[in-house]
Length: 458
Image (cartoon, rainbow, N blue to C red):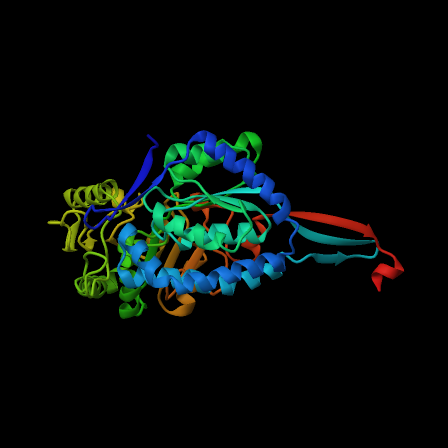
């Protein structure tokens, strides 16, 4: 009997659906098909690829209610967030594809002797491996630039959310040539088989541990690798901060998607003068969060994706409290499958919850003696994805320049303007995506040079 991958509703454990798992031989066959499809796909103009993908965006938008329902049942986020993610992806195709068309146009550089043209060629076959927390938008961030660069793509989605990924691929494939985009279902074994197969580019979003394994596996063949890994994002609250805005950002960014977000605010460093007011306001805001099943009215936060992740979060909370932390909200009596939104104070740098990625609805707050200590503690971590600083603008900017992260928000979250790269520093990233510069990482730049003559100069 063929082995299947079962997908369960994380809020109640009900079976949502199941799909067949691909064998190692089937994965190898998929790579062979992708290689053959890439030969035709790369010959299309980038504008022709764009036209096909933009047509798919309309279909995603038409199906947003149906797909959003499936996404929420499978991942657990509230229904309006599930539908919103589908619509975001549909809009994202229309917004990003023209940017990619421009990014992959040839560029000419001249000097007195030589005329050089930079062209962007596809690598060939891209293995895209995506996580479960944003199960439609995370695959799209990898699939879209890879396809637009002229690569064929094999997507291996998370085993936690296979159904919505399958529907996404089927939607795009209604408009794409055969085997330009394929999907492989399974868990670790299937991911390893794909990474070790004859692919040319590996684009991965997920944990730092798995990212290291992928990088090691890719090394013998010097395969191109793009890794967007985890974070342990700090937020610094200075003496001259707007406390209301700082508290709102900490709560909105810390509890979005039940804290299951790579740039979730997980640790806060606050200076003594404003600590009482900040902690009090954060506790008031967190107490207003309503958690529950994806389809319950007024719910703004769902469950943990699985028991393993829930146990990790609860263990961190329990250890911190045992070591002297105090829960202002939550902290105990968590319903099955959920973690109550929790705010911990009296935290210190020795606690695991201040050092290791939590990926759950917990905000850990540490009072610091001064801003120098805040910067030192913020940087004392292998992660370097996002950060935020709240204070008078010039003061906050001066602090931000000392932080070792790829993205920093000044009096806001770390999310940048449309068209900026999504980039991590240190062990939060290896390469990056988003933006013109990010799109280029899905293509091989090739320099074609000719002698500069009077005719070419004109």
